Amino acid sequence: MQNNNEIKTHFLFEKVNYKILLIGLAVIALGFILMSGGGSDDPNVFREDIFNFRRIRLAPTVVLIGFGITIYAILKNPNPAVKNTTDGETFPEEKPIKNFTNKKK
Image (cartoon, rainbow, N blue to C red; front, top):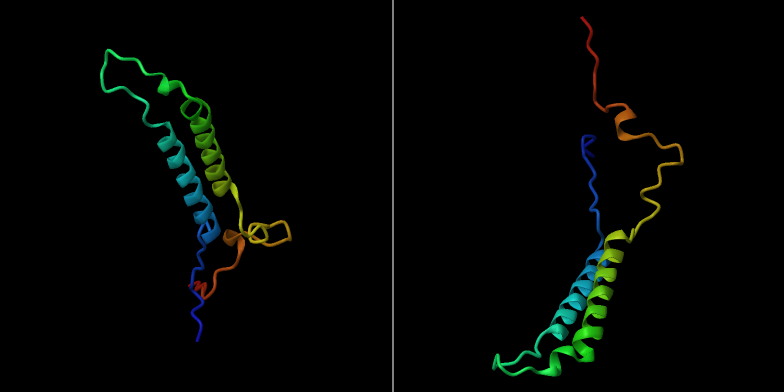
């Protein structure tokens, strides 16, 4: 026997969204790893390594690409047909309540 009072829930994200989100976070972490280093052990000595291509151009670009991937993961809708309510379907507030008896005295 099926319970008529069941509430069906669904998650906001699907498994695909979480995979893309983790890929985006890994790309961001890779960008920050590429940014690290290039410092000098002696404060009196200046090293030009801090201004090389990897730290100035490549690493920030990788971080921005990672942010783009995470934004895409958040905005991606895995089931666009589920959200469509323009087909005449009523909202849950407007549906009649099951197992409700109106007893007037």
